[in-house]
Amino acid sequence: MDAAVSEKIKKLLRRELRYTSTNLAFNMMISKMQKKLDADPAAMDDCMKEMEMFLGKYPIVAKVDLANIAAL
Image 1 (tube, rainbow, N blue to C red):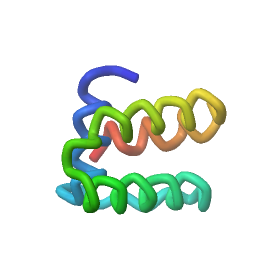
Image 2: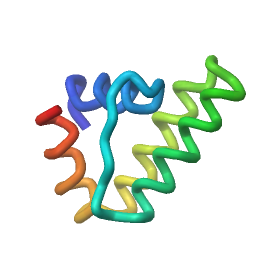
Image 3: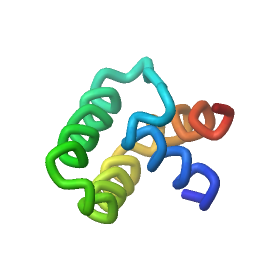
Image 4: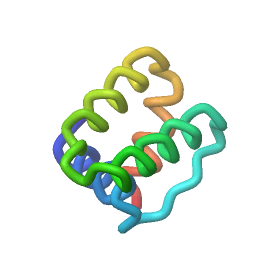
């Protein structure tokens, strides 16, 4: 994942950007990471690692959603 998309995902997790995927699992992952950050704002690195693992596991989701997030 490139730096620009990574920054947008961080903004998404901090609720500074709004994005809804067509993929339910990705939406659930975003919500889970947002709740984790609400509980512990210092957990951004852990959340980003989890997001990268999720997107690595599901490359089709990554391809579509990362392109959409990059366009935000």
